[in-house]
Amino acid sequence: MKNMKIFTSSLLILFLSNVSVLSDITASAPTNIIQKIATASSFTSTAQSTTQNASQIQQTTNNVISAKEIKKTVQEDAKKFGLLINEAALSNLTGEESNETQLVAINAQENVLSGSTELKPNLDTIVYDTGLMTLAKEGGHYNNDNTNTIFDTSAGAQQARIKVYVDFKRKVLFGEIESRVTLSGASQMINTKNGGAKAIVSLPVDGELTHTVVSSTGKILLNSSEPYAWLDKHATTSLVRADGSLAPYYDSSERADMLKNVSHGTGGDGNVYVGARFVTAGNGTAGQSTASFEATHAAVGSSASQFAAGVVRYSATATTKASKYTEELPK
Image (cartoon, rainbow, N blue to C red; front, side, top):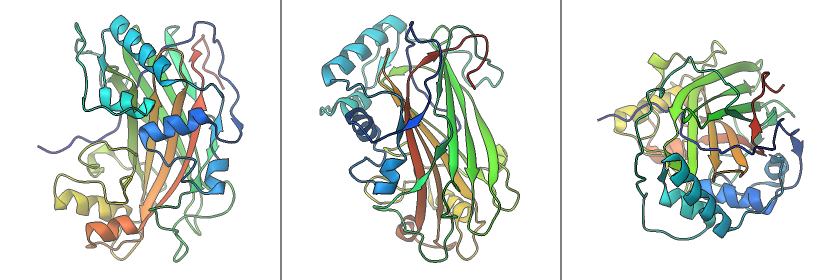
């Protein structure tokens, strides 16, 4: 069967009872907690990032969470809320090896609100807001975009903001990503993609939201026209896996559809693939959001390796505290 399009994602946050407002987002040097969470979800870590990219990582907490504390939080919260424990994600987050994929919790039930686009935040909702982030070009396996440049390289040309709403009474999350994409020689394209509600089913949570911005119109591509994303969610919300290979697709046809969509080479549509990734350990822990813009220099008809080698990626990461929703959304 074909893979489902990934428009919403599972994530988990337990709120802090003593937190009432969102913290201001301030740029600062990366810290141990940023590196630990980044490694857990295989975002480009601070050690792998360029100096420019690392300087874009924004945070609101410097608390270092030990593996023991993370595991304790996950176990207690999973039991309390009747959720699953994702052992693979937990081992990545703690830095410990595990051969297990997940543990099944008793009394986990299907959530009838999953998929709803009508949910609104209430007094039981927790808000995570990155504020507007400036994205920086990534190096490593990604194309340097120095020839026939796809993205505008001027300061502040690529920006994004991720908001995530988590409700434990309803066991759902929903959210949005605002993207401000600027291609070389073009005007900035500003859009907001809203993700439908997703049931919270496991801890720690690692979720993503992806979509296409059409360069010819400056708008978000209709869901019905959106190409299928990669076959399985992998370490990074990216067209390219952490080892530099192309993310796998159900078949060559689906891969070709995505290539045509994001190709800025011969025969391509010249669009941009926008991604949002959120990860957190559990009750009281910080949430990390990563926004990304991607496109490829590879021409339509290119091989998988050529597709991957041509991918250009801009990204930014913010770590934010949980804020309990009051009667007005934080600005």
